Length: 235
Image 1 (cartoon, rainbow, N blue to C red):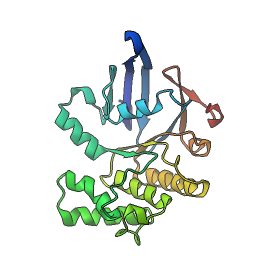
Image 2: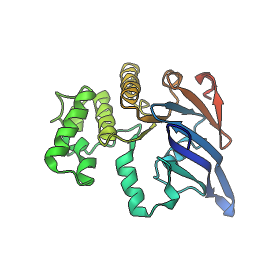
Image 3: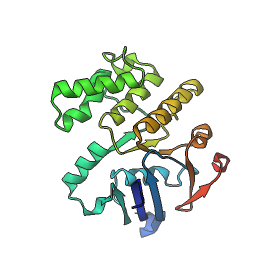
Image 4: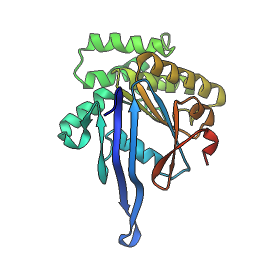
């Protein structure tokens, strides 16, 4: 991997079996290198395979060919238990819908990845409080998701994704469920935290304003990534 490269996809392919035993090619030999502290936006038409690519980058799915490397370690070389550990500790995920557990408070939701990772309760609580404060939720920690606004719920989801201080953050339409004002606040938060923490961010988005703030914009089209200069390329 190159200097400061944190995440790399090499000749990544993904195929599915369609009707009548036909093969549907979603991704064709995708190559991607993401560096520490870099924001990369992936744009493209609905159904182009953007979420599929993000799932492969985060070890949530297996490629049909090629491999993904995080910190120089290929996912394909890892036993399943080690891959689970890598995904839990080094990769953060933010989705369009927050997926917070409604019966738990904001603090408990953010503590959960740490507790699953074996952290003692007191240490996990302290770290979760710190991260929630960093996303502006210091006064909302004891609230359950239903007691939070949509923007607050998504900020809580960001805190949960960052609580492990991951090496890469993968975001799939993170502001797609928010109004314009809350989307702008979330974009500021994401970009600011990535710059401060020097965490790489790969974001799939239809939001041109967010895409324009990235260091690079890549268009996924016909199963391949193409660099573009402006988010006006978004179909």
